[in-house]
Image: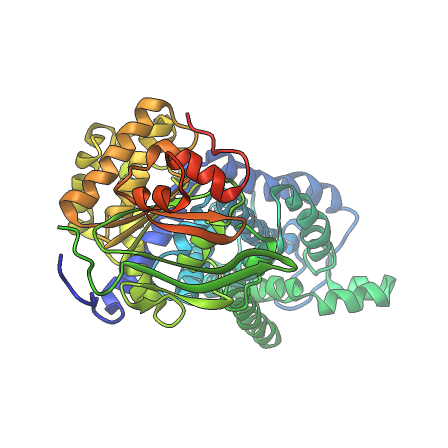
Length: 278
Length: 252
């Protein structure tokens, strides 16, 4: 123990980055499996919409033939991509809740004292939450299939990259919000001011042309809502098509929100320091 | 044996930090020599936790600089954090996960995986006397056991400096003594440098290095004996009271 300046090898190998990434994803998955209530409630929420709300609306709302659909579709089928996006929205916000919770408990601090670059840790965390959201979506799709909602089988595969992108975008949004949320209770605020407006002012429950007929203002809001584009990206992908404008919007938003989250957690900018103590 | 080594394990130089208008640290300088037990003594609100947040780079030092074994935390965070083991004041175990999984997760955060991670986790758990609890969920452990797991976890990546923020708060007398003994053993046998933040005077010996932090300022530093002698008081408790001009620190 008479070493002068202890010099660890500079940086990490690619293999070590992968170990770290795997560790973060694996922990998120373990937590998800262990918190069974969270899994159940993540599924019950969209299924309630699908089984009850959509059934009730079927008679009221007729959806005409709009892309990507080639025939008249039942309302249940129309609403499915919106519900998929809702699963991911809740998951993203819940990850942010768990980050606030973690921070209270100190788990987030454990993540942040890792010697890996902080951007990498945050991106790994986002990948982990995205992976968990995708698992939820596929379980939902399986149940929906049993309920008679059968998108083209190939669509189940082509929707995957769309899910990865939209999950990442919504996770980054949650992470950005988590840097601003000071207390656990404020998740109720997130519900009121983020989740509900994003969900209702989107194309999740009704096609936008229908919204336009009743209110141009709400229509404009829906067009500005990035969540709309996440839904449309998923909707088209589920039928093996790419909606390029949506892809562009979701990609740009993903980059912006991720950059924002990384900046928010940058110690030099100290946005998390403002809350004091930590 | 206590030869001062050239590069301190931790070096805090002229660090000031404010939360908005409230100044939490004012021109704080201190060093933790290698292979020494250094106590950071201060009441609640003295700035200990802020100092820990800066050392662990939760946020950036506003003024001054902090180095771990010569690596500046601001410039080479990776190198500094790699040599640093941390036990936070708040409980940071994932209660839903097993003890072993908590350790493996931490290993992954340091780029240690697979068999190596399991071997190390097994070793540190055995040293903490908790090898038989590896598969249990962390929430089944007692407070003292959780702390021991947290210390074991902090040692997993073999840091040269271990910082602990009030690690014995909320523990019973026996657990406190056991943890203190364990950490002192690490200093003696492995040459790990320790910064031990506390407000409990009875945890500090006369030969320990002591830094007295009060209202964000360093009031005294030196060995326990030196601090007592310099203040002209009879013992550390009296010295602390005289230095801070206030109520004595509570001691269980």
